[in-house]
Structure formats: C-alpha cells, structure tokens
Image (tube, rainbow, N blue to C red; front, side):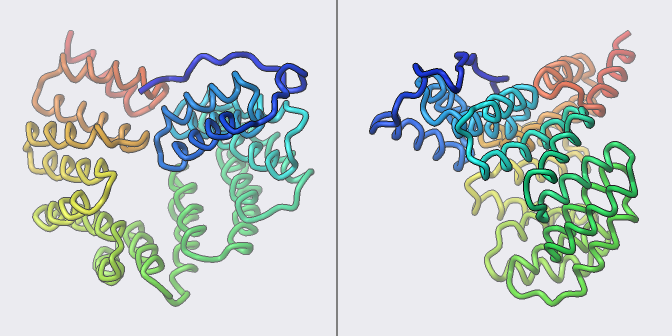
Length: 348
C-alpha cells in the first residue's frame, strides 16, 4: 500500500491552471472517478494527481484524491487534499459542504477534535443541517466527551433519518467510546419498525448481533440470505462464530468468498475460525488468500490477525517484525502499539 503520492502544487486561482477540460482531460478525470467508485484507490489517487497537475477540475480532483486517501487510511494526506479543494475559488457550494464533511471525518480519525468541530460549526453556519451533518457533529462531540451535545445531535440525526442504518451508525459511535448502553436504545427503536425488504432483514440481523441476541440475528439473516443478500451470508458467519459453531461459520464464509468479488472479509472470517480452533498455519494461509483483494479496513484486520497467528505459534520475532510493518501502515493503532510492547518484552 502507498502512503500517498507526490503532489504538484497548484494555485487554484492561477490563470495558468484554468485550462479547459477538453476531451483527453475529461477522460482522465472520468477514469479517476471510475477507479474511485470501484474501490481502486491507488489508481484513483494517481489519476487525480494527474488531473491536479493538468489543472483539470481542481476542486473535484482534490476532493477525489482526498476520498482515495481517506479510504486507504492516509488521513493526513486526505486533510491536505480536502483543504486544497476548499481553497479553490471556484468551488461550488454543494461541493464545499461535501468536502467539509469529509475533512471533519478525517480530523476525527486524527483525534484533532477541535478542528473537526470547527468544520462541523462551519457546516451548521453555512448550510441546512441534515441527518448526516447532525450525526457527524454528534460523533465529534462524543469524541470530545461532550456527551450532552453528542446526544442532542444524535437525536436530531435519528429524527431526520429514522431507520436501521442511522441507528447502527449511532450505536457504533457509542461503542467506540465504551458507551454501548447509550447506543443500544437506537437499535431497539429501529427494531420496532417492520422490515420491508432483504436489506432491512440484514440490518435487523446486524442489530440483534450487536445486542448479542444471536438466535434472532440468525433468523433475520437467514431471511435476508434467502433474498440473495451476500452481506447477510457474511453476517451469518459472524453469528455462528460468536456462538462457537465453527463448522457453520466456515460454511458461510466460504459461500461468501465464492459469491463476492472482494473476498478478503470472507478469508478473514475463515482465519478467525482457524485462530479460535488453534489452527495457526491454516489461519496464515487464509490471511494470504485475502490480501490481494483487501480494502483498507480488510487489510487492517487481516494484518493484525497475522500478528496474532505468529504470536500464538510462539514465533515472537516474526510477530514483532509484522507488528512494526503494521504500524508503518496504520500508525497510532492502540491495539498494535500494545502488542508491540508485549512482543518486545518477550524477546528480551
């Protein structure tokens, strides 16, 4: 994985960079945008860098590069991209709102909460608040331990967009801060509504999974899987894994791998089964199988589980080396830092 590409400095208002977007330039921009939509983030980043160097659609190109960096976990670089987009004189109002939201999200990841809240306040001052803006402000406030402000914004977010997706997002924000009970009430509220389609059954299954009601989770996810939901198959693997039913968990993950283009999560699920059963070499083989198609979050899980597999094999030197490599890709990961200290002590 790359940590960013060199950028040619561009002054958005400069006459030399106000080149028109002709046929070739438009093709370049469209290809970068397609790569971004398809999850080919390194190609997208390279394409948007070329667009910036050519002065093509600068606000949009900086934004595209920022999203690619965000998806790859390059938060510092993403903030630089989004800031460059915001500094362009010709940025459209709707695009400015979008970029401010993305930059605030990156700043939260970087734990630069005051700056993130400043962006949230800009959003509130310049635009009409919507569910996503309320959610982002609530998440930022929660990270700053401003619990009352967080709660008020989450209530507004759920009021604007009541349903499973927003309930799950709010729940996950609370869980990240160790406040599961505060988030559970949103799941309970969403579960009071009637499911309308396979996606709803899938979301309901995830909600019950979070609430550790695995029997109900399984029932909802089976209904979703019957409607050909690949995500439901993957979540069923998680449910069976939580119940220590490794045979059925493996079956679900293997089905997910066979039906999904991006199979990294399925291989990670198989590796978790292997780790639980003490099959550490098999876990390493499954991790290797998932790496070629791994997105950023999948890569994080796979590489961390690789460290765990080597540690449990008592191969502390390899585990330590893998931890150092992991922290080069995901600096500041608290769990990995703790693992590094543990392994360093074992090597003494």
